[in-house]
Length: 628
Ligand code: C2E
Ligand code: CA
Ligand code: CA
Image (tube, rainbow, N blue to C red; front, side, top):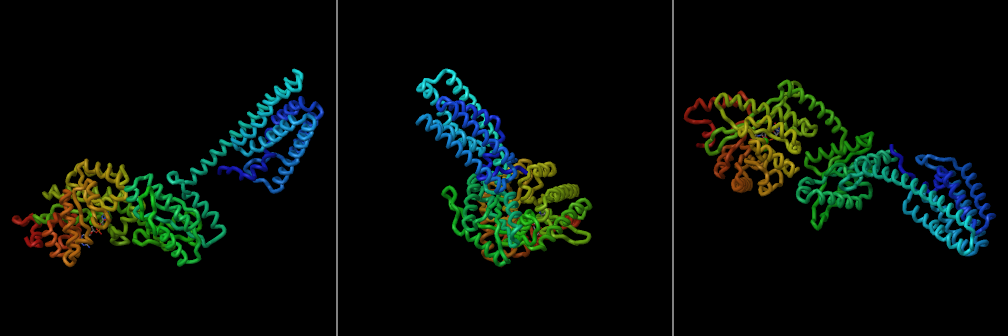
């Protein structure tokens, strides 16, 4: 642990203690000063002065042993050093008055300059301020500048003049010494302060960081068990940052923290690019919810950055110290609550201990998943996609399936989010992709040339390495392989995502915008994405047969997508009527339970064989369903 610099008051009391470090230099300096006062006062006062100084030093030495700076001074030590400082001051000022009497007004000037300068210089030298050392050295410089005039005025002898010059030199050396000690100390303190600041603050916004918040939690938790943490995620922060740029986004975070500070008055720490952490006290859940509501209310009016009004909303995770026995666990719990809130699309969620069990469950699920990848319990199903004009089965979407020996069928909606959270989605994606490419080649060998689509998690869109591995695996099968990426995933990290998607595209791998309509992106924005296909989310398709608004929406989306050169797939087709509507609005492809459910490879092959067995009707049963 680095020693923090002593507080200012402590530094002042250390004047006496610090002076001891430089006693030999100081004795030489003071002797020189005494000698230099000879021209004005004669030898008796000068000798008195040196003697008084020596006695004072001896008392100081006896009463104040040296102390390492890291050890705080006791009240008695502080009092003792103050007494010594003031007694020394009184003695020296008295001598100054004697000088005045003997040497007249010049003596007054010189004495005052000398004593005040000497004393204050020592004080500030120990307190560590550069400017103060310079300022306090000035009176002494003035003194030595004035000495030649004194000598000229009093017709002092050459020998006395030499003594003065020599003492001036010694004094100068003393000032240099004080300067260098102060410099070193000042620099090391600066470094310590800077290192402490860097370690405890976010470099982009200079807000306190996680470490500071953890230290604060540790300090406060000693006193109060009602302590709670709120982790706030700024909703759609990545989109905002994409729209206004990194510098303004950092400014936005600062403005938000100021706003929160006004309402909440405690530390506001930045925990990650889009999350902030706050400490508060609540006796029960309703108080905690009320607090969260106040935080949301603080953002009722837009935050202004660079003249732009930005509407801010939060998703908030709360956790109580009662459920966590350390600062880092408390923060982790609040983050778990936040993740759950995000998944459930609610704005506030309080951590419950059962979620801890979920965490442990998730980890064991993931270790099971890695094992299952190896043992073949994880397989691909393939859901056919039909061309609506010809009625032909032209492609499939690979959908992962996990038949766990004990847990039974584990739905992808259950384990994919966990794989994403724990980073295992990389292995899973590569596994699904490699198998899809093998199965595609196997079908091609039997005369069925199909396009294969594999889902690509948004989490992987920041990972250049995995994209390169995907390219390496899929390139041999291009252009009959494509990746499906949800529009929300692309919007989360627009620049980087688009650059990586471009690399896939350049390697000949197709791109499909999945679940279109569930995010809030406009098609105009999506035209920046190098995709060839748009999949309208099943929530807009499934009820096409009964919902007029959905039909209007799907119709206009198809027209717009076509104008951007995108092929359109409707997913979630569950009825004949829906299929007919899709044909009438010129949708290109359809996928859904009405046409075919996701099938294991063998059944897909059988379906294709059956179609081939009907020579006049390729994919026979589909045109029947289409009414062709
Ligand atoms: P998705 O990409 O939107 O996949 C389509 C989902 O809709 C599949 O669910 C499919 O079984 C289901 N579906 C197909 N036709 C219909 C229909 O007519 N009606 C209804 N109600 N549903 C239909 P599944 O297989 O449970 O997959 C759920 C999600 O899991 C997928 O949604 C996808 O986001 C994800 N997923 C599946 N496999 C993978 C994978 O290999 N990698 C990644 N990253 N995600 C995957
Ligand atoms: Ca998909
Ligand atoms: Ca989809």
